[in-house]
Length: 289
Image (cartoon, rainbow, N blue to C red; front, side, top):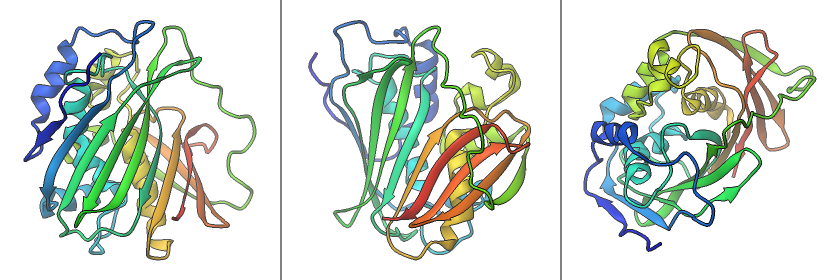
């Protein structure tokens, strides 16, 4: 299959038409045998982050203003481009139903909040696994022509009947890990959707989440990661940083989550658990590049 021409946007593409397209798309949940995803690319022309959306993002995710972008914020800036890429010509799998498995973010250096960013996204090919088919969505942010930030998000097109891996038995955090608990309101998914553009129905309300098999709305995985980063980033030395996460179990809203974090040789390890501190929602590391 020939690759479609790269998508180029002078301004962020509209979210709602792409969401309608995602809901109405008549695409399979898995790639048919023998098919793969062609090379797909999209680019958003350089733009300076707008102050009000950035302030709203910080407020929802818990970041304090420090003159630089939160390490997770370029993902939110690229959200409309991701949506256009995955609902556009060439991506043959249904977007709704894809599961965000893991992410690796590398900030080559801190990005000033007034720096224009050139965002580029791509997806190519897939991997067959026991649970389904995995796709890597790669996002790069350039400033002044040089790479400043990159992210690889792995998405899963789940095979019917497959189940998530069993959570590991025993503690997922070492003894003595620092612990804190957060209460999450029922409207958290809607609040994060407004600052990220991710209006997937599973995050918005119990009624819309039930259409996709969830008892209640679930928190965005990228909100969970951003909230952890907001807690840990101020304790890292300046310079480049790497943030890695494996998403485990969904966070139901409203609810409570417990963060456990501990020092490692280079930065921090963390586990985001349920309110009782037992079932893992996400685990990862955050440290210097």
